[in-house]
Image (cartoon, rainbow, N blue to C red; front, side, top):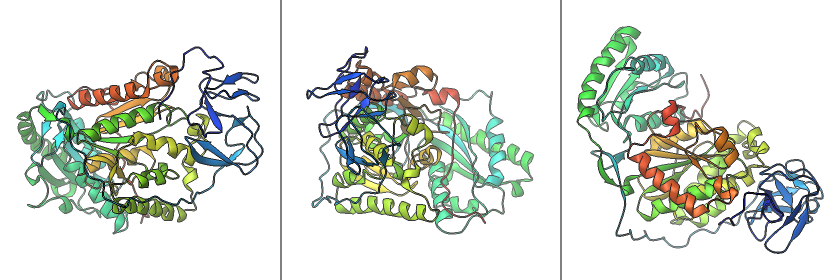
Length: 513
């Protein structure tokens, strides 16, 4: 989708955005008062009958009761009542219903694209397994909540210490899981998540820290066959003499790790080693018009050079999964993607939940009516490239191109899954505003609208709202994001990093015992 440039001053021609010829709604670029005249490129003219907030929808033609409402050329809901041209279209007159799709499965294997002759580079840390780090941290990872506080004390004990230039810091990974949990899928997923953090390309060396008696024993991460076993140390509070003694023992080990990390230097590395997580949070109606399509351009640019972009949030592809099935590399990838959607439906049924519980009050205030509309805008983050793989939560990412990962829509565990899978950068679009970061992975914030960008300038790295303002086009901002990704990969700090955001929340799927 390419957005027609719109002048800043509101006129009849630019006060609302008509995204697709078949859409029977338009999106208000600015607040529309009753009586505001709207004109569109196809010659249609509408007068607003209601007050329509910026980002909300206005009907372009009469929509009868039970008729479908269309945005992006796709079904996003069904009218609860008659809707006249010029009416405000939102939760009061549009209902959600689960759709059934006749999926267009791929019938052949899409070949891998030929890489271009020139691939840009960034300055990163080459790891022995072939992956590349964009940061160089020493990690202290809690095996359970029982060790979380001590992990934080260990990392905090190095605050103020002068570290070699090549080391970004000593970082803690506290969390609330690891004991009182059912043995099975939940423990398997937690262990996969923590193992991905311990063996992350942005981590030089790590400590796995337990209490000693918890369900999630540190032995699961240790041994001669463990990844990077020479750079991983395990210890417990019970075996080390308690909190203070453990802090001192850990400090002694970390000092050795600092000596190793000090020898590591940034060197030119092919940008094909970038693994960019794609996430959104606090979305609004502009997200699917500006920030998400622009990030989709960046995603396609990465795919073209053999790098990887990873779309997450299973709850936010619901209603748009048919579009990803059609783009899958082969039927196997498409089937695995659909298995995650089906699995999530079963998961929600256990608690009487629905995918439509996903849009938050803020999403709705920003103009998003239901999960179908939200998903149709969210998948734009993945551009138009072939879907090359579909992975479960925190599974190791190893395929170039556009990949999908099964995560919740809730931002903290979604980012955690992406990072544990090996993303060395994350791009995060937002319309309402977000402040989230991650302990060892740079998180780039992309604003969907200029009003929020100015209001939260301390937290935002890029303003995609310029697209709706008429000051930039989608491809232009997409290239800006791509260029910024290379700069951040080379060491430039994001707003979230400068503010010290370090949210880490593994996804808990089972009961508490």
